[in-house]
Amino acid sequence: MSLGSFIKKQFIDILQWNEDVDGVLAWRYPMQDFEIQYGGSLTVRESQVAVFVNEGKIADVFGPGMYKLTTQTLPVLTYLKNWDKLFESPFKSDVFFFSTRLQTGRKWGTPQAITLRDTDFGMVRLRAFGMYSYAVADARKFFTSISGTRAVYTRDDLEEQLRGILVSTMATSLGTASKPFLDLAANQTLMAGEVKGPIESAFGKYGLALDVFNVTSINLPEDLQQALDKRIAIGMAGDLNKYTQYQVANAVPLAAQNEGGMAGVGASLSAGLVLGQTMAQGLAAGQKTPSEPSAAPATAAPATAAPTPDPEARLAQLKGLLDKGLISAGDFESAKAEVIKKLVG
Image 1 (cartoon, rainbow, N blue to C red):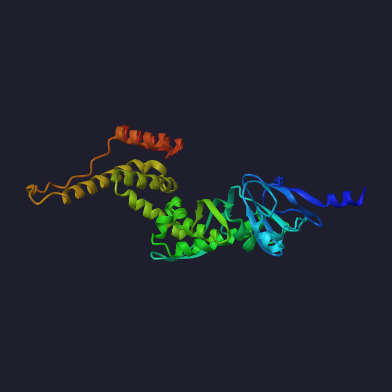
Image 2 (cartoon, rainbow, N blue to C red; image 1 turned 180 degrees about the horizontal axis):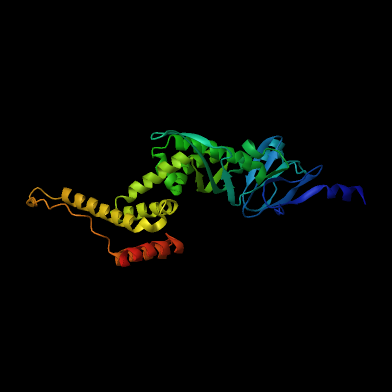
């Protein structure tokens, strides 16, 4: 092999990156002692950006396309290397490729419970988990603030830092949110929307673009979860029928644990329905206009014993609870037996 052939092999004619390994965000072209041939070509594929770094300074940034490396395509290098005198010679420069593909399905979570300030509860502790996606949007910022001159910078290297940014930004955003915490905790989409904007700004400082951010689950302390359940129950009270159903659904498991089992469920259900009807009548009376005449006071009726529940109606109620899965077959048979026993004496 002649000396000329050996020297020629040290020149790089084509620079490109095939992205053979998934999860690599930045990759430095392996120059070693090679030099880039003047007039060589640079190929930047879709979803890539190439950055030339000369003597520690970013010289040029190239988007997708094919480029001939001349003084016309490298104006900054022309200045740095004195190519304005048309000194056509191989040159040495670090070339970094960056993947701008969307990194999807990334998981985030709070390893430890975070403490938030809230107007209703003072201090709140919670753990949250979710998914997000992002992409490198500004290679210049990403190089100077994150990846630097490392030969390979991967998604795993970055995301440990990103999770810290996510958690700290979420704690700050929720702590200063104008919406009550219980409303945010009851609506995970609302919570994600509340913090997405600040997270986008935090990512932007490092040359990253946040694409999707969502909250998939929230773990609350038991006392706070109970308060949230009560808030939901009170909201259901706006519809008295739904509220009565909610009360009965909560009473069935308790009745099954008490002495007598499901035998008293029919009477409890009747009492709940009577209570709901009484509340509805009271609300209707309060909504009457002043122009409506008041009914004459009724003569007090003599006190009578409470009517005995209709056995047929009671059995139908129990069958309805069984069909809905609110009571077991054993509880149904036990309660039915007591109704029939009272009926036949």
